[in-house]
Image (cartoon, rainbow, N blue to C red; front, top):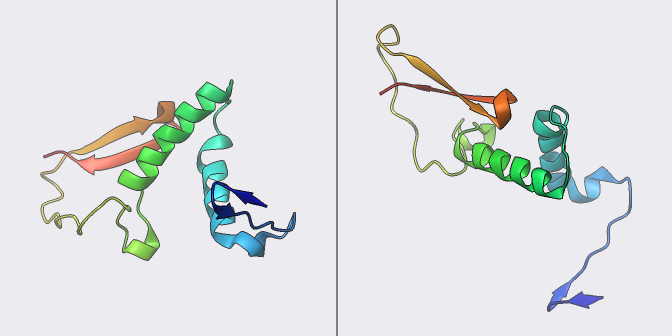
Length: 104
C-alpha cells in the first residue's frame, strides 16, 4: 500500500515492542493528561494535546537529555542562593500539570 509516496508498515495488534517509542509517548500522554481530563469533543482533545505538547517540549525535564526539555539549548544557570529566590508555579491544563521556576 502506497500513500503520498510513503510506504505504510503494518504492525501486529497488541505487540508493544514492535513500536516501543510510540507506545512510550502514548503511555506518557495517557498517564499524565488523558487520565485526568474529561475530553468533550475532538476540538477539545486537540487543544488539550497542543497545550500538553508545549509543556512536554518546553518545560518537562527528560532524563535522556540531562533533565532538560527538548526545546532547551543548554543547561539552566545554577541557583546558589535558594533562600533569596521565590518559586513560581504555572498551572497547565487547569492545574492538571504544574510547572515550577524561580522568579527572576
